[in-house]
Amino acid sequence: MFLGIHFNAVLEYWEWFLSGAGITLQISLIATVFGLIIGIVGAIGRRSEIYAVRKISGCYVEIIRNTPLLVQLFVAYFGLSAIGFQLSAFFVAACAVTVNNGAYITEIVRAGFDAVGRSQVESAQGLGLSRRQIYWHVVIRPGLEKVYPALTSQFVLMMLATAICSQIAVDGLTGAAVFVQSDTYRPFATYIVVAAIYIILSFILRFLLWLLGLLLFPRLRRLGTSL
Image (cartoon, rainbow, N blue to C red):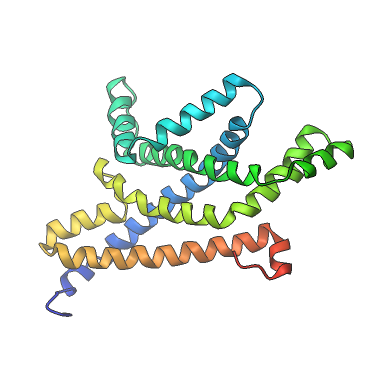
């Protein structure tokens, strides 16, 4: 007991919390990897010279960023079920969080691409690099390097946002908390424990992303630049 809060009954459900944290991390990993892919493609689309591609990318970003994740989750879960697609709550949650994450990453990555100087692109063209080579070596990699700290913050925020997935009965960390507090009748102690676990997960995720940044962008490591 601490400050009148009884934790013993809640901590007896540590296996539920551990399982919920694992599911939360699984959804986060899927949304991180595929959200980044969507973000890069979306950012290229936002800068495309083709009007239709530019407009489609823009509509995707504006629709997703101007509607709540919870509404998107309900639309995907109940909408797909209404038209005959019986999908698991985990799959729908992972897809919804990925699509939502991709829209925000699109704008972050686009800012990184826009930060690459026009003179660098023109120099690459003068060296005879193909359009694909220019995008990879001159635009994408340097652009991602510039916005990597912002991407790191977005990935952590996305992991915390997975708490909403409990609304469609996904047994993530918050879903586990709903069960534990209903079984122990100790909601305050339960959510104190869950908050502590989310803080730990956030620090672990930031550390892993920092290590990944050093691996992907060795120039920053050589310069001693902190991500």
